[in-house]
Image (cartoon, rainbow, N blue to C red; front, side, top):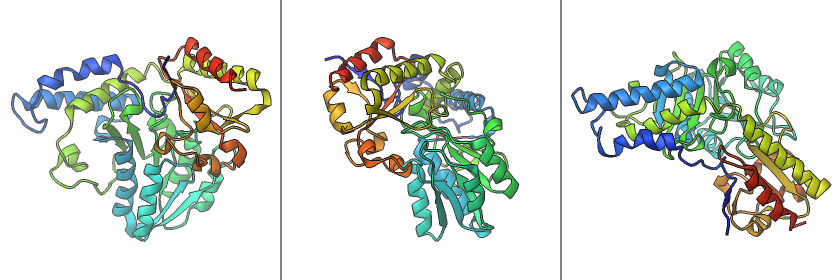
Length: 371
């Protein structure tokens, strides 16, 4: 049985260069980066090199990067940290209905603590309108959190427009950029955000590592309390091994931003699907403002999980990987107003750097047998 991996939005393999960069830290360089002696100094140097590499991809200063255990922790730190640090200024948070659970669940938690949260709707392409953000702002609003690109349908949100609104009102702006980092430009100056989350395993780095960009001057209450690691922003001895992997992956990602070849393959995939299935296949997400590697389609009159079962050996998803194994309608597609009969037949194919046309043709051949 042939295996084809088209689930790169769920997780990516380690880049060979990342493996090579991490290897020395599996046996040597075991010192604590906070120790000022011969064993700790090399570890500290490696840690700061990785910080510079992440900052280089985002176009920010190295001291604005805090290493975390992944995108979930970064999102939790940003959302809970702002609330705990600024709740005396008001407890109102604005987000959208199509966020990742690692944003939605912290918001639900804050509601239990007395916060007020507005969950903005999106249009049929999955995009929020800046006008809705402006209308939702109140004198008590302290944070807006909107993902950069949706993990299921790939729709890219108008962050630059939203950031102009938040700046005008003196409100902090966070974005979950787990899916966009390394795929499309994520320069802080262009996005205008105050906080940005990175997930290592979405950018060919290991699982269990991530980063949070915190603009200079922004104060967050730490999630972890203890010693003064990460300039007092995250207690716990830093994982030099994983952070080195993330730094290397971010440096590599600079040459992949935009992913033109992957985008061509994705568009070829969609064109051939239309030729094979005609009107029986529907595109979910924005037709142009979406990630270059993401193709979320619905096969009308079919159930997505059943199609995936028939595509034995093809790794894809019927929605977010966090909801894999369920035939329930994706909350994202529901929020987009997608008809139930269409939404139930949705499959997300997400391509990666290593995807080939031969692999796409193989999947198309298998799909054509299901007409």
